[in-house]
Length: 451
Image (cartoon, rainbow, N blue to C red; front, side, top):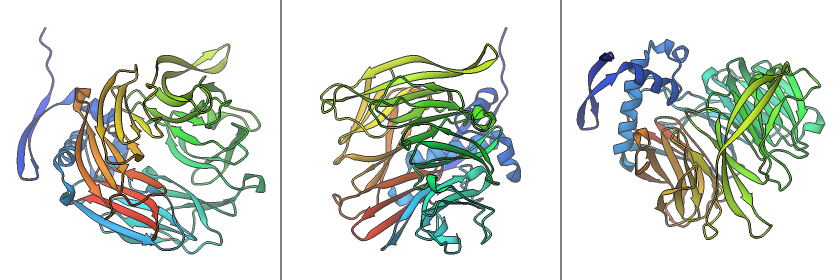
Protein backbone atom coordinates (compact mmCIF):
# COMPACT_ATOMS: atom_id res chain seq x y z
CA UNK A 1 0.00 0.00 0.00
CA UNK A 2 1.30 3.42 -0.93
CA UNK A 3 0.67 6.05 1.71
CA UNK A 4 -0.39 9.41 0.29
CA UNK A 5 -0.51 12.78 1.95
CA UNK A 6 -2.00 16.04 0.86
CA UNK A 7 0.61 18.71 0.17
CA UNK A 8 0.86 22.21 -1.20
CA UNK A 9 3.65 24.34 -2.59
CA UNK A 10 4.28 28.02 -1.99
CA UNK A 11 6.90 30.54 -3.07
CA UNK A 12 8.07 32.56 -0.08
CA UNK A 13 10.18 35.70 0.14
CA UNK A 14 12.70 36.05 2.94
CA UNK A 15 14.79 39.20 2.73
CA UNK A 16 16.41 39.22 -0.70
CA UNK A 17 15.93 35.50 -1.17
CA UNK A 18 13.10 33.35 -2.42
CA UNK A 19 12.52 29.70 -1.67
CA UNK A 20 9.93 27.12 -2.69
CA UNK A 21 8.38 25.23 0.18
CA UNK A 22 6.46 21.98 -0.10
CA UNK A 23 4.14 21.57 2.87
CA UNK A 24 2.83 18.13 3.78
CA UNK A 25 -0.39 18.79 5.65
CA UNK A 26 -0.82 16.15 8.39
CA UNK A 27 2.64 16.52 9.95
CA UNK A 28 2.70 20.29 9.60
CA UNK A 29 -0.69 20.66 11.23
CA UNK A 30 0.61 18.71 14.23
CA UNK A 31 3.66 20.99 14.24
CA UNK A 32 1.39 24.04 14.43
CA UNK A 33 -0.51 22.53 17.34
CA UNK A 34 2.53 21.47 19.34
CA UNK A 35 5.51 23.65 18.50
CA UNK A 36 3.72 27.00 18.19
CA UNK A 37 0.64 26.35 20.36
CA UNK A 38 -1.66 27.04 17.39
CA UNK A 39 -5.28 27.69 18.33
CA UNK A 40 -7.99 28.24 15.74
CA UNK A 41 -9.98 30.37 18.20
CA UNK A 42 -7.09 32.81 18.54
CA UNK A 43 -6.74 33.15 14.77
CA UNK A 44 -10.43 33.57 13.90
CA UNK A 45 -10.31 37.41 13.93
CA UNK A 46 -7.77 37.29 11.08
CA UNK A 47 -9.38 34.27 9.38
CA UNK A 48 -6.03 32.52 9.70
CA UNK A 49 -6.03 28.81 8.85
CA UNK A 50 -3.38 26.51 10.26
CA UNK A 51 -1.71 26.42 6.81
CA UNK A 52 -1.35 30.21 6.72
CA UNK A 53 -0.26 30.12 10.35
CA UNK A 54 2.44 27.56 9.46
CA UNK A 55 3.72 29.70 6.59
CA UNK A 56 3.86 32.84 8.72
CA UNK A 57 5.76 31.17 11.52
CA UNK A 58 8.16 29.43 9.13
CA UNK A 59 8.88 32.75 7.42
CA UNK A 60 9.50 34.43 10.77
CA UNK A 61 11.92 31.71 11.84
CA UNK A 62 13.84 32.01 8.57
CA UNK A 63 14.07 35.76 9.04
CA UNK A 64 15.41 35.26 12.55
CA UNK A 65 17.90 32.72 11.23
CA UNK A 66 19.37 35.17 8.74
CA UNK A 67 18.91 38.37 10.78
CA UNK A 68 21.69 40.69 11.91
CA UNK A 69 21.56 43.56 14.37
CA UNK A 70 20.58 46.05 11.65
CA UNK A 71 17.42 44.03 10.94
CA UNK A 72 15.99 45.03 14.33
CA UNK A 73 14.46 48.28 15.49
CA UNK A 74 16.05 49.24 18.80
CA UNK A 75 14.40 51.36 21.49
CA UNK A 76 15.73 52.27 24.91
CA UNK A 77 13.61 53.71 27.74
CA UNK A 78 15.36 54.92 30.90
CA UNK A 79 13.66 55.68 34.21
CA UNK A 80 16.08 57.68 36.40
CA UNK A 81 14.12 57.04 39.61
CA UNK A 82 12.10 54.02 40.64
CA UNK A 83 12.05 50.90 38.50
CA UNK A 84 10.15 48.92 35.91
CA UNK A 85 8.21 46.14 37.63
CA UNK A 86 8.85 43.02 35.64
CA UNK A 87 7.99 42.88 31.93
CA UNK A 88 5.22 40.81 30.38
CA UNK A 89 3.64 40.62 26.93
CA UNK A 90 0.04 41.76 26.66
CA UNK A 91 -0.15 40.75 22.99
CA UNK A 92 -0.08 37.14 21.89
CA UNK A 93 2.80 35.69 19.89
CA UNK A 94 0.72 35.02 16.77
CA UNK A 95 1.77 38.21 14.99
CA UNK A 96 2.38 38.61 11.28
CA UNK A 97 5.28 40.25 9.48
CA UNK A 98 2.86 42.06 7.13
CA UNK A 99 1.98 44.66 9.76
CA UNK A 100 -1.15 43.03 11.15
CA UNK A 101 -1.15 43.37 14.90
CA UNK A 102 1.72 44.64 17.00
CA UNK A 103 3.83 43.53 19.93
CA UNK A 104 2.64 45.13 23.15
CA UNK A 105 4.27 44.74 26.55
CA UNK A 106 3.21 45.81 30.03
CA UNK A 107 5.52 47.18 32.70
CA UNK A 108 4.75 48.68 36.07
CA UNK A 109 6.65 51.86 36.95
CA UNK A 110 6.13 53.10 40.50
CA UNK A 111 2.45 54.11 40.77
CA UNK A 112 1.31 53.36 37.19
CA UNK A 113 0.99 50.49 34.76
CA UNK A 114 2.15 51.15 31.20
CA UNK A 115 1.59 49.42 27.86
CA UNK A 116 4.33 49.95 25.25
CA UNK A 117 4.36 49.44 21.49
CA UNK A 118 7.58 47.44 21.10
CA UNK A 119 8.19 48.52 17.49
CA UNK A 120 7.86 52.21 18.26
CA UNK A 121 9.01 52.24 21.87
CA UNK A 122 6.02 54.45 22.68
CA UNK A 123 3.45 54.42 25.46
CA UNK A 124 0.04 53.45 24.03
CA UNK A 125 -1.81 53.28 27.36
CA UNK A 126 -1.20 54.03 31.03
CA UNK A 127 -3.28 53.57 34.13
CA UNK A 128 -4.10 56.43 36.48
CA UNK A 129 -1.59 56.87 39.29
CA UNK A 130 -2.33 54.39 42.06
CA UNK A 131 -2.16 55.01 45.80
CA UNK A 132 0.65 52.48 46.27
CA UNK A 133 3.66 51.31 44.27
CA UNK A 134 3.03 48.46 41.83
CA UNK A 135 5.24 45.54 42.88
CA UNK A 136 4.04 42.51 40.89
CA UNK A 137 2.76 42.01 37.36
CA UNK A 138 1.27 39.17 35.35
CA UNK A 139 -0.59 39.02 32.03
CA UNK A 140 -2.92 36.70 30.13
CA UNK A 141 -2.09 37.60 26.50
CA UNK A 142 -4.86 35.43 25.05
CA UNK A 143 -7.45 37.60 26.84
CA UNK A 144 -5.58 40.91 26.80
CA UNK A 145 -5.55 41.10 30.61
CA UNK A 146 -2.90 42.50 32.95
CA UNK A 147 -2.89 41.90 36.70
CA UNK A 148 -1.04 44.07 39.21
CA UNK A 149 -0.40 43.75 42.94
CA UNK A 150 0.73 46.89 44.78
CA UNK A 151 2.54 47.45 48.07
CA UNK A 152 -0.77 47.75 49.95
CA UNK A 153 -1.73 44.20 48.82
CA UNK A 154 -4.37 45.47 46.39
CA UNK A 155 -4.92 43.26 43.34
CA UNK A 156 -6.29 44.83 40.14
CA UNK A 157 -7.20 43.43 36.73
CA UNK A 158 -6.79 45.73 33.70
CA UNK A 159 -7.75 45.47 30.04
CA UNK A 160 -5.19 48.20 29.18
CA UNK A 161 -7.77 50.15 27.22
CA UNK A 162 -9.98 51.72 29.86
CA UNK A 163 -8.79 53.94 32.74
CA UNK A 164 -10.58 51.88 35.39
CA UNK A 165 -9.66 48.38 36.51
CA UNK A 166 -12.04 45.54 35.60
CA UNK A 167 -11.84 44.15 39.13
CA UNK A 168 -10.17 45.00 42.43
CA UNK A 169 -9.53 42.91 45.52
CA UNK A 170 -7.67 43.74 48.71
CA UNK A 171 -5.76 40.82 50.18
CA UNK A 172 -5.64 40.22 53.94
CA UNK A 173 -2.78 41.83 55.86
CA UNK A 174 -1.29 38.38 56.38
CA UNK A 175 -0.78 38.23 52.58
CA UNK A 176 1.41 41.34 52.45
CA UNK A 177 4.65 41.15 50.48
CA UNK A 178 3.47 38.67 47.85
CA UNK A 179 6.31 36.47 46.72
CA UNK A 180 5.02 35.23 43.35
CA UNK A 181 2.12 36.27 41.12
CA UNK A 182 1.28 34.20 38.02
CA UNK A 183 -1.69 34.01 35.64
CA UNK A 184 -2.58 31.14 33.32
CA UNK A 185 -5.26 30.34 30.76
CA UNK A 186 -6.25 26.72 31.46
CA UNK A 187 -8.79 24.58 29.64
CA UNK A 188 -11.22 25.33 32.49
CA UNK A 189 -10.68 29.08 32.31
CA UNK A 190 -8.16 31.75 33.34
CA UNK A 191 -6.77 31.69 36.88
CA UNK A 192 -4.52 33.88 39.02
CA UNK A 193 -2.11 32.39 41.56
CA UNK A 194 -0.66 34.45 44.40
CA UNK A 195 1.90 33.02 46.82
CA UNK A 196 2.52 35.13 49.94
CA UNK A 197 5.59 35.37 52.14
CA UNK A 198 4.16 32.78 54.56
CA UNK A 199 3.89 30.19 51.82
CA UNK A 200 0.11 30.38 51.36
CA UNK A 201 -1.19 29.93 47.83
CA UNK A 202 -4.40 31.65 46.73
CA UNK A 203 -6.14 30.78 43.46
CA UNK A 204 -8.56 33.31 41.92
CA UNK A 205 -10.79 33.39 38.85
CA UNK A 206 -10.13 36.02 36.18
CA UNK A 207 -11.20 38.68 35.61
CA UNK A 208 -13.63 38.53 38.58
CA UNK A 209 -10.98 37.80 41.27
CA UNK A 210 -13.21 35.30 43.06
CA UNK A 211 -11.24 33.14 45.48
CA UNK A 212 -11.36 29.49 44.43
CA UNK A 213 -9.09 27.96 47.05
CA UNK A 214 -6.32 28.73 49.52
CA UNK A 215 -3.73 26.32 50.90
CA UNK A 216 -0.23 26.07 52.32
CA UNK A 217 2.57 25.13 49.94
CA UNK A 218 5.75 25.77 51.97
CA UNK A 219 6.54 27.48 55.30
CA UNK A 220 7.93 30.39 53.23
CA UNK A 221 7.21 32.04 49.92
CA UNK A 222 8.13 29.99 46.86
CA UNK A 223 11.11 30.97 44.71
CA UNK A 224 9.71 29.67 41.38
CA UNK A 225 6.26 28.95 39.93
CA UNK A 226 6.25 27.52 36.40
CA UNK A 227 3.28 26.34 34.32
CA UNK A 228 3.57 23.65 31.67
CA UNK A 229 3.07 24.72 28.02
CA UNK A 230 -0.57 23.56 28.07
CA UNK A 231 -1.04 24.90 31.63
CA UNK A 232 -2.24 21.49 32.87
CA UNK A 233 0.61 21.30 35.38
CA UNK A 234 2.10 23.85 37.77
CA UNK A 235 5.57 23.40 39.28
CA UNK A 236 6.39 25.22 42.54
CA UNK A 237 9.71 25.13 44.37
CA UNK A 238 11.62 26.81 47.18
CA UNK A 239 15.42 26.82 47.16
CA UNK A 240 15.81 25.20 50.55
CA UNK A 241 17.82 22.14 51.67
CA UNK A 242 14.79 20.49 53.31
CA UNK A 243 11.92 21.45 51.00
CA UNK A 244 10.92 19.34 48.00
CA UNK A 245 9.31 20.92 44.91
CA UNK A 246 5.64 20.20 44.27
CA UNK A 247 3.72 19.67 41.04
CA UNK A 248 -0.02 20.41 41.01
CA UNK A 249 -2.72 19.81 38.42
CA UNK A 250 -4.40 23.08 37.44
CA UNK A 251 -7.68 21.20 37.14
CA UNK A 252 -7.37 20.02 40.73
CA UNK A 253 -6.51 23.55 41.89
CA UNK A 254 -9.76 24.85 40.40
CA UNK A 255 -11.90 22.03 41.78
CA UNK A 256 -10.46 21.62 45.27
CA UNK A 257 -13.06 22.58 47.91
CA UNK A 258 -12.35 25.59 50.10
CA UNK A 259 -10.39 24.61 53.19
CA UNK A 260 -8.86 21.53 51.51
CA UNK A 261 -5.39 21.05 50.04
CA UNK A 262 -5.10 19.89 46.41
CA UNK A 263 -3.23 16.72 45.58
CA UNK A 264 0.31 17.03 44.26
CA UNK A 265 3.46 15.13 43.34
CA UNK A 266 6.48 15.84 45.54
CA UNK A 267 9.75 15.89 43.57
CA UNK A 268 12.26 14.07 45.82
CA UNK A 269 15.13 16.50 45.20
CA UNK A 270 15.52 19.41 47.63
CA UNK A 271 17.48 22.63 46.96
CA UNK A 272 15.80 22.97 43.55
CA UNK A 273 16.32 26.38 41.96
CA UNK A 274 15.07 26.16 38.36
CA UNK A 275 13.10 23.93 36.00
CA UNK A 276 11.99 23.62 32.38
CA UNK A 277 8.99 21.90 30.81
CA UNK A 278 9.46 20.05 27.52
CA UNK A 279 7.69 22.21 24.86
CA UNK A 280 6.01 19.23 23.16
CA UNK A 281 5.78 16.59 25.88
CA UNK A 282 3.85 18.87 28.20
CA UNK A 283 3.95 16.48 31.16
CA UNK A 284 7.76 16.17 31.11
CA UNK A 285 9.81 18.45 33.35
CA UNK A 286 13.55 18.73 34.02
CA UNK A 287 14.56 20.19 37.39
CA UNK A 288 17.86 21.85 38.29
CA UNK A 289 18.94 21.27 41.90
CA UNK A 290 21.99 21.43 44.14
CA UNK A 291 23.45 18.18 45.49
CA UNK A 292 26.07 17.62 48.18
CA UNK A 293 27.12 19.31 51.39
CA UNK A 294 27.09 23.04 52.00
CA UNK A 295 30.08 24.71 50.40
CA UNK A 296 30.73 21.84 48.02
CA UNK A 297 27.45 21.48 46.19
CA UNK A 298 27.27 20.17 42.63
CA UNK A 299 24.44 20.90 40.24
CA UNK A 300 22.23 18.06 39.11
CA UNK A 301 19.38 17.64 36.61
CA UNK A 302 16.51 15.21 37.07
CA UNK A 303 13.65 14.59 34.61
CA UNK A 304 10.14 13.31 35.40
CA UNK A 305 7.02 12.42 33.45
CA UNK A 306 3.96 13.48 35.42
CA UNK A 307 0.56 11.77 35.17
CA UNK A 308 -2.80 11.99 36.89
CA UNK A 309 -4.64 8.79 37.75
CA UNK A 310 -7.63 7.59 39.74
CA UNK A 311 -6.96 5.24 42.67
CA UNK A 312 -9.72 4.12 45.00
CA UNK A 313 -12.02 6.88 43.82
CA UNK A 314 -9.42 9.57 44.49
CA UNK A 315 -7.14 11.51 42.16
CA UNK A 316 -3.43 10.72 42.46
CA UNK A 317 -0.58 12.62 40.77
CA UNK A 318 2.44 10.48 39.97
CA UNK A 319 5.92 11.27 38.71
CA UNK A 320 8.10 8.73 36.92
CA UNK A 321 11.83 9.54 36.89
CA UNK A 322 13.24 8.96 33.41
CA UNK A 323 16.68 10.61 33.60
CA UNK A 324 19.19 12.03 36.08
CA UNK A 325 22.77 13.29 35.97
CA UNK A 326 25.24 15.46 37.89
CA UNK A 327 27.50 18.07 36.32
CA UNK A 328 31.27 17.56 36.49
CA UNK A 329 32.77 18.99 39.67
CA UNK A 330 34.94 21.47 37.75
CA UNK A 331 31.93 23.07 35.99
CA UNK A 332 30.43 26.19 37.54
CA UNK A 333 26.94 25.71 38.89
CA UNK A 334 24.24 27.19 36.64
CA UNK A 335 21.45 29.55 37.68
CA UNK A 336 19.36 29.59 34.48
CA UNK A 337 18.22 26.70 32.29
CA UNK A 338 15.67 25.51 29.74
CA UNK A 339 14.76 22.40 27.76
CA UNK A 340 14.15 21.76 24.06
CA UNK A 341 11.46 19.53 22.60
CA UNK A 342 14.16 16.91 21.96
CA UNK A 343 15.22 16.67 25.63
CA UNK A 344 18.27 18.89 25.29
CA UNK A 345 19.07 20.90 28.43
CA UNK A 346 20.62 24.33 27.86
CA UNK A 347 22.06 26.35 30.75
CA UNK A 348 24.54 29.08 31.55
CA UNK A 349 27.66 27.99 33.40
CA UNK A 350 30.07 30.83 34.06
CA UNK A 351 31.02 32.33 30.68
CA UNK A 352 29.62 29.36 28.71
CA UNK A 353 26.28 28.34 27.35
CA UNK A 354 26.21 24.55 27.75
CA UNK A 355 24.08 21.90 26.06
CA UNK A 356 23.57 18.42 27.57
CA UNK A 357 21.09 15.66 26.90
CA UNK A 358 18.80 14.91 29.84
CA UNK A 359 20.89 11.74 30.28
CA UNK A 360 24.12 13.67 30.90
CA UNK A 361 25.77 13.55 27.48
CA UNK A 362 27.60 16.79 26.69
CA UNK A 363 26.56 17.97 23.23
CA UNK A 364 27.82 21.49 22.63
CA UNK A 365 28.93 24.74 24.26
CA UNK A 366 29.23 28.41 23.31
CA UNK A 367 31.90 30.63 24.88
CA UNK A 368 31.16 34.23 25.89
CA UNK A 369 33.26 37.11 27.21
CA UNK A 370 31.31 37.26 30.48
CA UNK A 371 28.85 35.25 32.56
CA UNK A 372 25.34 34.44 31.40
CA UNK A 373 23.21 36.66 33.64
CA UNK A 374 19.79 35.63 32.29
CA UNK A 375 18.37 33.01 29.95
CA UNK A 376 15.07 32.55 28.10
CA UNK A 377 14.26 29.26 26.37
CA UNK A 378 11.22 28.26 24.31
CA UNK A 379 10.43 25.80 21.51
CA UNK A 380 12.00 28.03 18.84
CA UNK A 381 14.81 30.08 20.39
CA UNK A 382 17.27 30.62 23.20
CA UNK A 383 18.08 34.17 24.31
CA UNK A 384 21.09 34.68 26.57
CA UNK A 385 21.76 38.00 28.29
CA UNK A 386 25.52 38.35 28.41
CA UNK A 387 27.54 41.44 29.21
CA UNK A 388 25.11 44.10 28.01
CA UNK A 389 23.88 42.19 24.96
CA UNK A 390 21.22 39.68 23.93
CA UNK A 391 22.60 36.64 22.12
CA UNK A 392 19.96 35.01 19.93
CA UNK A 393 20.11 31.28 19.14
CA UNK A 394 17.66 29.02 17.27
CA UNK A 395 17.03 25.32 17.82
CA UNK A 396 17.88 23.10 14.86
CA UNK A 397 14.87 21.54 13.15
CA UNK A 398 14.11 17.98 14.33
CA UNK A 399 16.81 18.25 16.98
CA UNK A 400 19.70 17.33 14.67
CA UNK A 401 23.29 18.20 15.54
CA UNK A 402 24.56 20.79 16.29
CA UNK A 403 21.19 21.20 18.10
CA UNK A 404 21.50 24.98 18.55
CA UNK A 405 22.87 27.61 16.20
CA UNK A 406 23.96 31.17 16.91
CA UNK A 407 22.06 33.82 14.93
CA UNK A 408 22.96 37.33 16.04
CA UNK A 409 24.02 39.57 18.93
CA UNK A 410 21.94 42.60 19.91
CA UNK A 411 23.94 44.99 22.07
CA UNK A 412 22.13 47.40 24.37
CA UNK A 413 25.04 48.81 26.43
CA UNK A 414 27.89 50.83 24.98
CA UNK A 415 30.44 49.64 27.51
CA UNK A 416 30.93 45.95 27.09
CA UNK A 417 31.72 45.30 30.73
CA UNK A 418 29.27 47.68 32.38
CA UNK A 419 27.46 46.06 35.29
CA UNK A 420 23.89 44.75 35.14
CA UNK A 421 22.42 44.29 38.61
CA UNK A 422 19.31 42.38 37.54
CA UNK A 423 17.30 41.77 34.41
CA UNK A 424 14.03 40.36 33.08
CA UNK A 425 13.71 38.80 29.64
CA UNK A 426 10.60 38.25 27.52
CA UNK A 427 9.92 37.65 23.82
CA UNK A 428 7.33 36.87 21.20
CA UNK A 429 7.94 35.61 17.65
CA UNK A 430 9.05 39.02 16.30
CA UNK A 431 10.51 40.91 19.28
CA UNK A 432 12.56 40.73 22.49
CA UNK A 433 12.55 42.95 25.56
CA UNK A 434 14.83 43.23 28.58
CA UNK A 435 14.72 45.30 31.75
CA UNK A 436 17.66 45.85 34.07
CA UNK A 437 19.30 48.27 36.46
CA UNK A 438 22.41 50.35 35.81
CA UNK A 439 23.95 53.44 37.38
CA UNK A 440 21.66 55.77 35.38
CA UNK A 441 18.51 54.06 36.68
CA UNK A 442 16.07 51.40 35.53
CA UNK A 443 16.24 50.64 31.80
CA UNK A 444 13.85 48.94 29.39
CA UNK A 445 15.29 47.89 26.02
CA UNK A 446 13.14 46.78 23.08
CA UNK A 447 14.19 44.92 19.94
CA UNK A 448 11.73 44.20 17.10
CA UNK A 449 12.28 42.78 13.63
CA UNK A 450 11.76 45.40 10.94
CA UNK A 451 8.71 44.79 8.78
